[in-house]
Length: 115
Image 1 (spheres, rainbow, N blue to C red):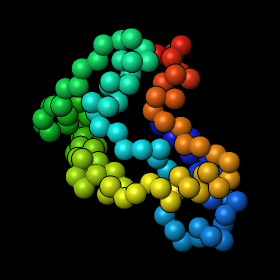
Image 2: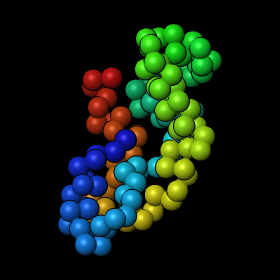
Image 3: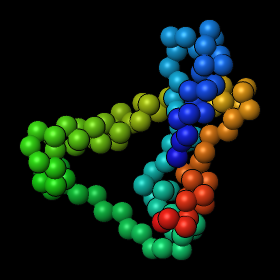
């Protein structure tokens, strides 16, 4: 997971260098199986990924918002979040200012008591 504040702080500190550029606020790209495996590892709780068809998905969200949410989530699959672009430049910006991105596993470990 991310801490957006780290990216904002780094961008403000490097304002002239990053003005007009895209900052990709993500520690890594994660597949559902990776997310669930790390969740199980940290929490000891069993998980299961179930992908539902489009009509079932939309049936849980009323009206046109269901279609919009579906399209947003499908967009994450294809072409993919940030279109698969390298996260190196954005994460190097963090490191330049003494920050590190928070990984999914680190987030889980910090949040374990509430999960």
